[in-house]
Image (cartoon, rainbow, N blue to C red; front, top):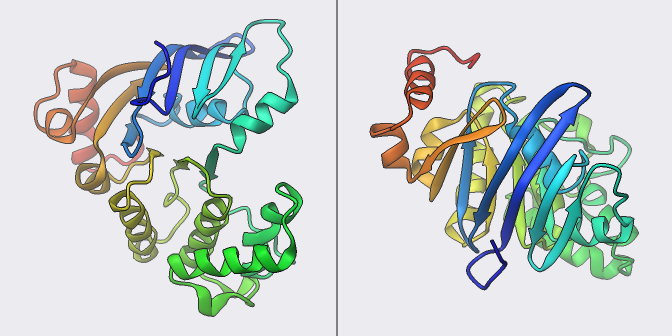
Length: 259
């Protein structure tokens, strides 16, 4: 598959081994600009590893990754140029399960740190952008508050603002609500829904099926490191074709959150 104006992410034959464990088995897919792609599947199926390989938090064993015009080719024994990895990373924002905020920095300090250290932006310019994105996630009033004084939901919204402040072309979310108490999940999902409605290109790993049904343009079911089935929410949730997808959804809807 070649990159074109209708594709912002393109992945070809992506493999990831951890020792003898084959976690990703030749995964290929593409994402269109403004598309919201949601990955679902059992725990340990490779969903989070897939996201982490896209921005080289985990180095792929082999495969081709292209994001917004930046392409990196990986192969066994092939050293990837760190400058190419940095260029790829700057195209993407990543929000993790844990918030990973610096405890010694205020909310604003956390948001602007990347602008100052990575983009070498003057502090006054970085502050203006940081305040813009704190306001976007509804937390401008917490600009001078340290993480210890914030709820889990507020911390995750700060983490989202931090990623948005770098103005990436793609946002990656790795189970962004899994570490939150149930009553705090909604405030994070509301921010993500707003981003989707504004046309943000997003890849989301989640177990929040109602969110996936409401927001996703396409859902991918991943099992044992392979894409088993993909399609719009109505197809996946109401008319899944593959038996593995059917079994997963039946288990999940019956309340087995361990899947």
